[in-house]
Image: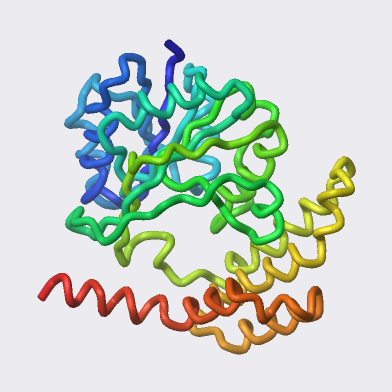
Length: 304
């Protein structure tokens, strides 16, 4: 059976870290290497890690961001199959075994990813998420990141695609999947095998800076500047850049930067005039406006 290495980058999530670690230690798959890297936390993370003794491999370093931390973890790992788990998320029972079997059963696949649950700070299920089927062209055109928590991939493919880009702070995962997808397909496991936690301290809820919000534009411009992109991908450049602008507009709306959002919507329309009226784009922009107040209302109702 191939050895699996799971890297957990931890930064100020001491409250949730034990549940993440326990969810990996409790897996039934017999060959799992767990590496936890503390990225300069200022909370009780070190004390949490010390309690696990020799059950886990862990190190602490000065803060250097998620991408560099994951790259470090994978560099010291020894598994044939790699994965990562955010310190506030969890793997559900049987996740490793089922995902490994999925990769073995699909020899042309470089990665697999399951359906998952959204959970609240108290680990109560908010709702189930059916992950989208993998479609590389859709990933390029619509800035869609199909894999969520609980994704696994072959080390050989990772070495071809390269490390996560340390200059990216908001969307390094999407940019990595974009590169990895050029070496083979991803397979979806139609079972909930992971949980993504929603809480006010999570990166997905935090207000992004202008620079981080604009990452989608830089990612797509760099991607379409690659010298070896096939023609059937290059013809989608305008719509891909339009959708990247709308993704940025959504993030600006969530951060209440309405002027920046309008600028990006205008740029999206200039790239592809008809794209603004696509149902997906309109839903995305409405989500940008309502995302934060709706989540706060949901949490207040759950606490009452």
